[in-house]
Length: 279
Ligand SMILES: Nc1ncnc2c1ncn2[C@@H]1O[C@H](COP(=O)(O)OP(=O)(O)OP(=O)(O)O)[C@@H](O)[C@H]1O
Image (tube, rainbow, N blue to C red; front, side, top):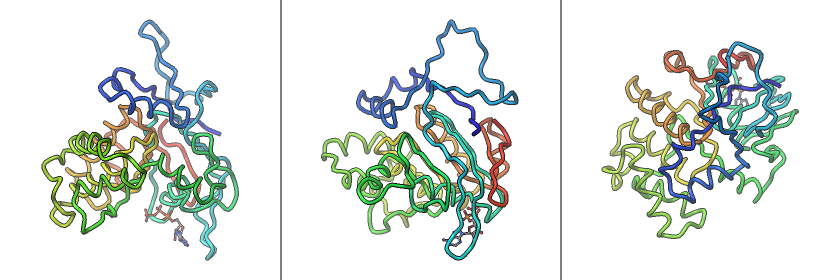
């Protein structure tokens, strides 16, 4: 099993967050982040060297020899091994039909592997059913290419709905909603309906919805697929900001440019097989 680069969460970046939000980010999935002291002279990991096996960190995602064959015989993934550590930002690239969406669907339990094991935190997500799966999904934010907003609800309602469904109090919903809308630059559009927004704005609503309950893991499936270059960059910038406050981000894209201008680890899926392009 190979490990992607672990990026330690910078405690200073968490310091601006409310205490309970900070605690959630640190506790969920037993997010263990070894601090590098300022006095630590050891260099950051070298990407092209053999991947470091840091056994002190519990991965947030691990796939072991995962295979997915759909009921119609389509082979989507074969022998996929991947470890993602808390605080990582990982790009998943690959041609159309290579298996990128399937990988994310397996991670949030929408599809089940044909064989192999998948752990999210310490939960075998592929074995979970019913309530346990629903509870697990609360800890995973998901962003889709086509936004999936509720058309007859305002921006504020679309985002607040997630919290309401999870039983948050009105006060807590209010407390979380505004900073989240501000973070995606939409505080001025709170009362708009989705069809009154641009594609980029709709995608930012969907990011706000995905992170308003502070999940430690965010999965974004082609979040820039329907956006122009400028909006795509803005979306990636927001995902990076979320990553900088401790959220682990896995994003699929076939936009080579976005991958090139970033220095984050990249895996490629080709014919269902996963290759590390940049660690
Ligand atoms: N529900 C399904 N039933 C049967 N086959 C499927 C299903 N979903 C995906 N596939 C097949 O699995 C393979 C991988 O599909 P997947 O959607 O994961 O690719 P992708 O890399 O995300 O593609 P794209 O970039 O075009 O979104 C493809 O051959 C696809 O036809």
